[in-house]
Length: 94
Image 1 (cartoon, one colour):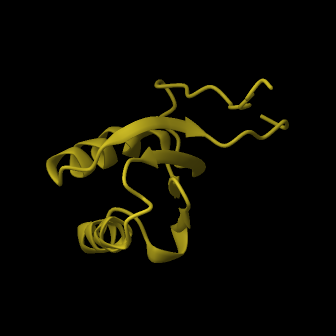
Image 2 (cartoon, one colour):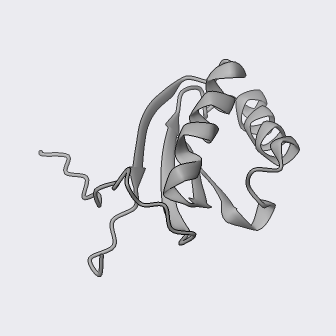
């Protein structure tokens, strides 16, 4: 069985204030302490509002601008989270 994942492309030249649903695949999400720490780190950073976060079984979906992605990556890496993928959720209208 093929495992196919449809994603939209990220345009690094997008400097608009339009928010996109960006998924961050994080290692260890099956461990409650990792989930809780991830939420705490993001809330404490004040980069993302709580209503712009959706916890998933293997990561977190954030409603952010494209230019916020590097900031989130740096924050998560500085806090020793393992990031295995970053991609926008598929939207056929884009």
